[in-house]
Image 1 (cartoon, helix red, strand yellow):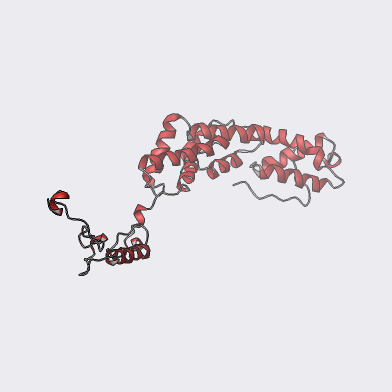
Image 2 (cartoon, rainbow, N blue to C red; image 1 turned 30 degrees about the vertical axis):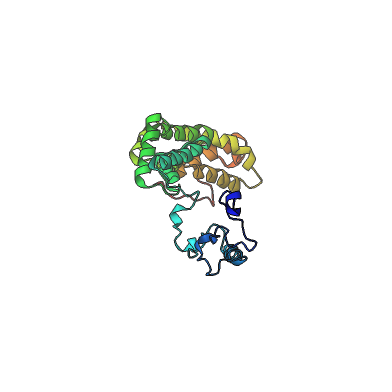
Length: 261
């Protein structure tokens, strides 16, 4: 039996490794013509160096792409577009916060809404209509409240009340209706106010006391004739100027008032 027959037809491996399976270079590199020993190892090591030189996340053999060159600012995280409903809700929330601190006319409510960023006229009018339907805005009722407060709490005359309604944005027709309901008792209310202030304005100079008290009444919207009569009457009642008093109102020296409009 020959040596080949004893080994089962298998040839012994040579020490030089000529009969080993060929080593295929990694990453598609071409095999060296002399595929011996360290040849494939050198190719593999060189390829690893290439991998280390590449930025993280970029495939080997592909050009480096700067994503900042193609970034779309509209895709940035956190940026969103506000819907019409969201805008309307934000505007109504701002108006409601204002109404919790004080009552508003429709004109004042529109001013508040125009201060909300992004609110256009459509959003403003829809919010106004909604609050009118809810009863939160009512110019007629608000005018009545203003008249009552001016007359009962501050003792103001008709002129001052009308000016207050104008400044608060109450329409002229609504203001006229509220003033028509006001009793024509300026003289009585002026005298009542003058009596409450007569002693505090009194002094050695009767003329100065009369000017001070009549001026306070005029600033509250009473006509000059009504203010002067009420002031003189209230001062006489507390004994100021009584020595020069005569039946019926008469102007005191040095006191001048412009004619009523």
